Amino acid sequence: MDDLELIIDLHKGALRLGPGSSEETGKALKLTNLNLSEDLKIADIGCGSGAQTLELARLTRGKIIAVDLFPEFLEKVKEYAEEEGYKERINTLQCSMDDLPFEEESLDLIWSEGAIYNMGFQKGLLAWRKFLKPGGYIAVSEITWLKEDRPPELEQFWSGTYSEMHSLEVKKDQLKNCGYELVGNFTISENSWLDNYYTPMLSRIPDFLKRHQEDKNAEDLVKEEQHEIDLFKKYKDYYGYVFYIARKI
Image (cartoon, rainbow, N blue to C red; front, side):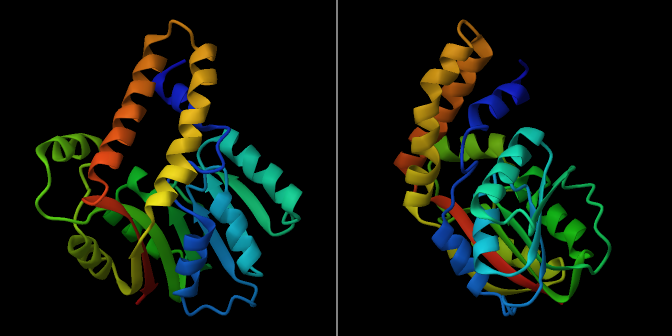
């Protein structure tokens, strides 16, 4: 397997492919002024296995298009949607987030938890804006610096991992410059990282390594993930995922 295939194999059994929680999905949704009893059209971009997709279906009466590049994750979305009774309201779409087929001004809400970084925060905001109806909303969680003076070890790691990692104020300016009005933001909890993302990942690693015995790339991937976890535990006060909820203007 190449590196991407190994990453998919490590994460394909996960309910969440990044930090988050049902409570925080609900909190972000409440910050929009949308009428949740209406037949909203929602796109969940970079949906992964669909934990937040299901929560959006629970909390709204809308029709949700779950978008992801990888069929392994979309199959999980379909499976969960059928189990929970949302098969009629959740549809899946396999495509790249930078080549979406939506009609302009067709969506009431664009959702993306921990995924917009694949395009880059500002590039994603600009590219997706045209799909929102006038006054429509976007809600994205994005990794963000929470303090200015940061340990060199941490700076070095994230500068090599995600060059667009910026402060809260920079992210707010980017939203404004891309044609949005920020209506709310909050930092997701430590438990959303540890209990919902990192701990389940650690539990999958032994079986993952058994499937890929003597594969140095698999071993290196595990070391990278462990290093990221160790850094979060050590420096969690310096950065986090921030949910940004904004209205198209």
